[in-house]
Length: 348
Image 1 (tube, rainbow, N blue to C red):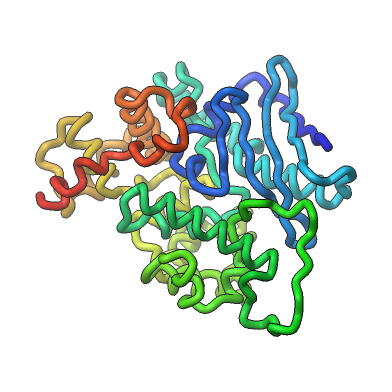
Image 2: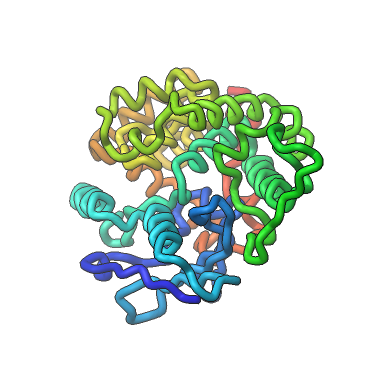
């Protein structure tokens, strides 16, 4: 069954390829980008918490996206709305996202000429937050592997191979025929139902397992309201304060999550940022100790879109070396970072 997501006035500025292939999240499971068809395939969550695979594309000349829902002949109105909502979030198809892109391009001429301004993200803020944790203190190849293992664990939870702590061994789970074959990204409810040792047994996340379990439990018990945070019902300083109180959300992870929420004023500084400032912007004196301040200072002229300007530079740098990210084979995703420079940078 096919659904339509109408672009409205955004049809003039939206480019499927550019909206997806501009951040490492598009390379992380369960996302699968098809370079030849310029389509994105992944599972999305339904109203009963099960998952279904979809393929999202934008056929040439059409004023709407086509979302092919696999394995379901008739999608309920509730599930249709939920699917469209998740796709719109991933591709930043909202009035606010459109305004942000236009305003950013007004202060960044190169971004305007290249059509850059929509940073890809996940269908849910929880997935963004967990993936931000996976990015910390890890090389890119390991990050990709950890995300893939989490999706495989979700598949085992869905088919009953792995049981939550609250489910009796005698009780059998009945997977639905349209359930995503390779697993969706696990929800907060699914993560909260597991012990960190079980997660590490299947996913080998190390200390991160405890951090994501703590995050999931806070979401599930209501002490952390992600919907309220994302809907703009809090001042950004309050959002930052809540992030700082969470285990695993230091400056880098917090800045990444804020970017996913549509706050672009902070640059998520890590070894790649250090490499970029030294290699591209010739700031040879920049060090780990001065990095955060140096990066913020360099991009402040693009306020309040410092993070967008940073990602524009980083993507340009990657594509200068590797060619268009949208054309890479998944087997080449490991090469999309300055990993070869990391040991040298850390030594300095």
